Image (cartoon, rainbow, N blue to C red; front, side, top):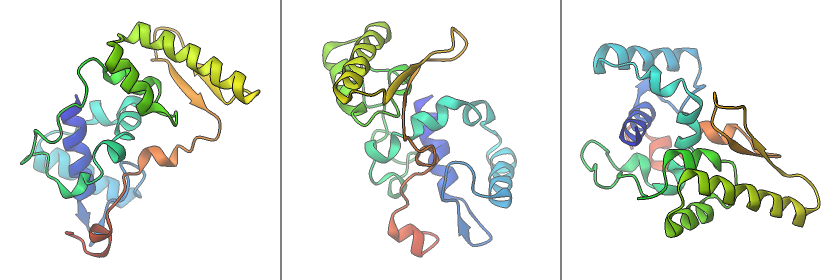
Length: 179
């Protein structure tokens, strides 16, 4: 799943249609998104809709800016070892749970060092959230859980979902179509 996320995101942001590069993982405008969909279905032979039309895809892709600062400058098809999943104990469930939190990488480091499975990590995060809210003296963080049908995550007041769809586009890719 990680490799598919990396490759699809990289391909998506390298597509140039009518001389314009896609700037976001989604919401690039009707023609840009249709062109990418056509490219994936016709040229690549897969649509990846089962991957890209889920909540987890964009919430996990939100980590790419921080994990791979030169994401667009490297090629996952030529350098797969650079894009290996960065954790041994931490899973996508861990990442999804805290994707909105400012200290998400500190929490993931704790989970990795202590080898916390998702249940123990969830318990740790719940305590962490309540502790932060108590220190702030107001509820900034809220655990969102909708039963067994959707994964739990921490909602942060003031979080911008616009951040989720963006990957930083280096200047060399903005000024020239091919970097």
